[in-house]
Length: 296
Image (cartoon, rainbow, N blue to C red):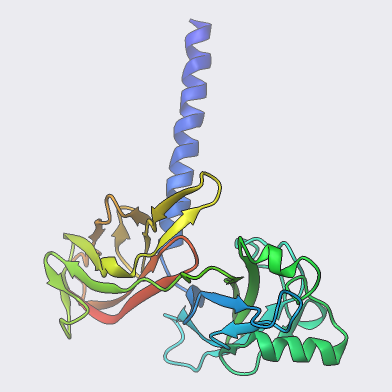
């Protein structure tokens, strides 16, 4: 009998742990403050060529890439949001290290929302700073598999601030990674990207389904297994109200369900939603819908 109670206690601990994990996952899809939900480089991979030999000055194509961010500020009341971009000069920064500060001595401020390797190289040469992706011995060899460059973004709105990272790859691969394209976002069969004003009935479950341009999913070589693959996209789901059945969905089961809030006899209200498509290699696309009505 004592053994049964031991097992029951262990099972209860597991159940409580799973419940806590599920609650944390649900919380990550609920947006109630200033947050960066996505960061996009117009060219997530940039090609490097050495037209005059391996020791010559590299030529980058394109020479620069535009940067943009999906920033949510649901409680801001339309206040201005300022974006501050920097390139990280410290190697081995993980994508999850969003609390790392790449400003100051750890990075170099970028003017405007763009990244330019040639301009960065000239700035580094003039400042005496060093970076692990700066042309040097072994640079061209490392480009075979791609050299990551991390860009750091800080968003300011009033007294609130938040930060995020974006990775861009420098490589000599002929086929550069591109951003995927989200073609449609359907809710119960209605394309929200072209529907105009949208209303949801309160306390109901709606089926969401993303549709993407298949041709924008790139073929690439998996260097670990030495096989050619097609990108496997996944999707992030966010909202200011209601509840998603999943925080992420993938290519094989991209659909998601959203339960609209129960007004419980109260007045209609609005909900903001954000949908982010990732190609799992640095490319992203997104769609945001603001002010959708929830009605009895």
